[in-house]
Amino acid sequence: MNKNLILAVVLSSLVYIGWYSFMEKRLPKPQPAQQAQAAQSSQPAAAAQTGAAAAQAEPAPLPADWKQKAVKLSAGKAEYTFNAETASLASAVYQGPVAPVELVPDPQRGFLYASFPGKFALKARTDRSVEFVSQQGPIRVTKKFTLTGDEGVTALEIQAVNTSGSPQSLAPWELRIGPGLDTVKSEMKENEAELKAVYTFQESGRKHPTLEKIKDDEPAQNDWVWAGLNNRYFLAAFANPSFKTTRPLRRDEKVGKSEKTPVLAVPMPGSALRPGETAVWTTLFYLGPKDHALLQKLGFGLDRSVDFGFFAPLAKFANSSLIYFHKLTGNYGIAIIILSVIIQILLTPLSFKSYKAMAVMKKIQPEMQSIQKMYKDDPQRMNREVMDLYKRHGTNPLGGCLPMLLQIPVFFALFTALRNSWSLHGAPFFFWIKDLSSKDPFYVLPLVMGGVMFLQQHLSPQTSDPAQAAMMKWMPVIFTFMFLSFPSGLVLYWLINSTWGFAQSMYLQKNMA
Image (tube, rainbow, N blue to C red; front, side, top):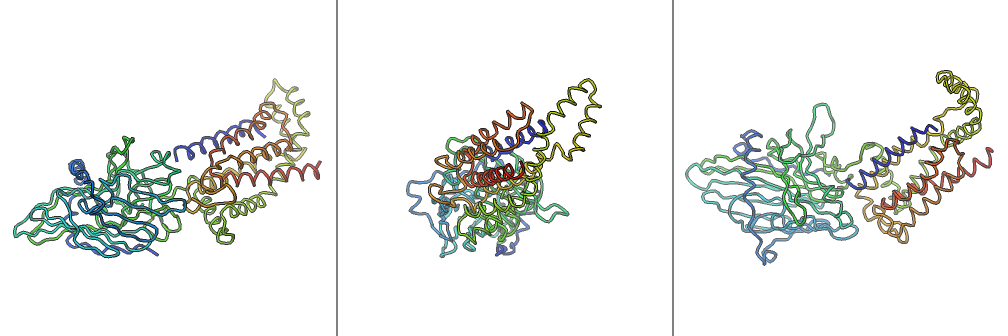
């Protein structure tokens, strides 16, 4: 096995894994906007220029008794609390599989805050909707939130009506999500690095929307399909808005200890309203887990928020396979074992060839060393003689590396699937493993895995190259330390993989000696 190839494989694996470890029914369409063109006539660039001014309109500090005046609605696994004075979502508690999660970090600013001057008051409410109103001189503004189902989807409609008998101007304003988006307790430490402002746009010739990050203080560069904030497990996003030509931007604000917590803001241009005229803005709003199957069902490309990494097709297939085996067994740990065994069975013929190639390479090492010594001053002749040696023995120096190279995309695909799949969050296995998406609390699985890898390495044919031999000897130790903080589901996969390899090595050593 070529030394440089092994080093490249191991180093690239460490870089990839380190990055992901530490940095990492359709929606009902809104009703057509009435007179919305009056509010949308300005160009996106002009809307972006108004963002800085609109951002100055911050909500007043919440009074101590704000929760007594708040309005609560429930849908599915979430309970929503609306602040009547700001007509914004001050709290959203999602009942996750491990514990309830508060998704709104800052109740004062909340989500879906619109920077109109003045205070709002409750106008009407039902079990599924709440409406607030604010009279701002001759202009009356209403905000209506409607929970459209159990999937965490809200329809938002904002109206501005000129109630006077003369033309009036509506000042620039903005609608926003954030600052921040909270997550499950186990991910809070990494949330600052994971939290991003993103949007999707439809490129010509592409079936699915393209996902892009929004840079600091720079509007999105395209008309958008959805835009919002997301972290590893949750998404808060506007979807299918009537104002998609008004491009969103990211602005950082201070929340708690963090100085740069992102806000996704949609700056709306000012507009002129004739007597009795109404301007309407509508959008759908999703706030909930990044459940890939659910987001696919909801549409609008919301599933693009789930990061499946470089090997996305493999990761999606792995995720779908795990969900399928979970339906059969009722346990994601058993589903991981089944998928691991199937993968190893498929790779067994290549493993046999690899073992044979490594055994032959070990056998011809003395002859190869003799050739290298004999032709050390003639590299071209030495290479020809070495290649002739390979041909005579029917071997290939890369033959022993092939199964390892093929397992790298499988490993990375499973890594991203286990790390980012909501389905696996809080999924228990047996005994002390209560959450397959979190590390083993007692480090039992990674230590057992390291021991099995060591035994497998001890039984495998050893190379005569001292540098390669030393590196291969240390690989079980390196992998054990890496896997200490990995999701226990991923460690379980690699443990099954190593156990299978150990059993194969014992069989081949006994029957192919």
